[in-house]
Image 1 (cartoon, rainbow, N blue to C red):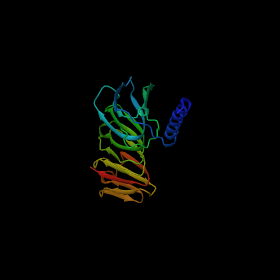
Image 2 (cartoon, rainbow, N blue to C red):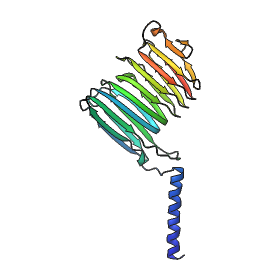
Image 3 (spheres, rainbow, N blue to C red):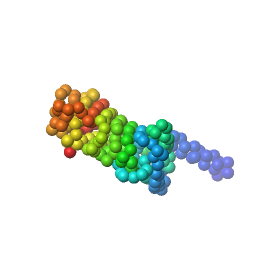
Image 4 (cartoon, helix red, strand yellow):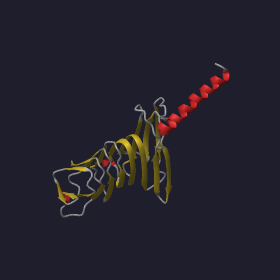
Amino acid sequence: MKKENRISSILLIIAMAVISILITGCWPTGQLISETMDIDLNEALEVNATIVIYKGNLEIEGISQPTLLTSNFSYNLERWFPRISYMVENGIGNLKITQDNEKSNTTQLVNNWLLLFNSMVPLSLDIIMGSAESHLNLNSINLTDLKAAIGTGDTVIDLTGDYQNYINIYLLGGIGHTTLNLSRGVKTGILIEGTLNRIKCDKDFHRINHYYFNSASVFEEKKINITIFSGIGIIEINLI
């Protein structure tokens, strides 16, 4: 084979590989990378956090620590390293942790996020989950409100904490299985918008049409108000 033909063949192979990547979104994976990052409060009195993860495993907890966040990210697709920004203005911190929506058809991807938040600072959470398996252990976080869009994965949300403030929760249901754990002794009301989700509600909840409330809140103002916008998956609501 002539040199020119060999070069043409090599270029053709490279071009076909690039086109295949662009069409299928199938990027090669590499070695497992583990990154740890701490973020200081920087004198913030309260924090708004936005978290976007399209594919992988997300775990959130609250712990006693001087920093706002201790985090660990493990991944084997370099493009999935999360983009992180944090700024404080007038005593309010704004944290963003986002993942590029990089498509990939390979089944050997690893993308695990562990986010440990300061358990004392008032925290508002806005979370978008794609095909993520998520465990949101919010019982030890000083939660002020939560907005969460749930995708195709299984999600467990623990709201059994002894919260000091009234909390509004907005959940957009996905097509996976969502488990919502609530405290039996905390006044809670739940409004279900839409009827696509299959709702499995604890037998100790009372129901009026699409509104549910537990016995602790029959004659009192609700401490946790939850609105669920229905998807097509299963939502299981437990009193613990």
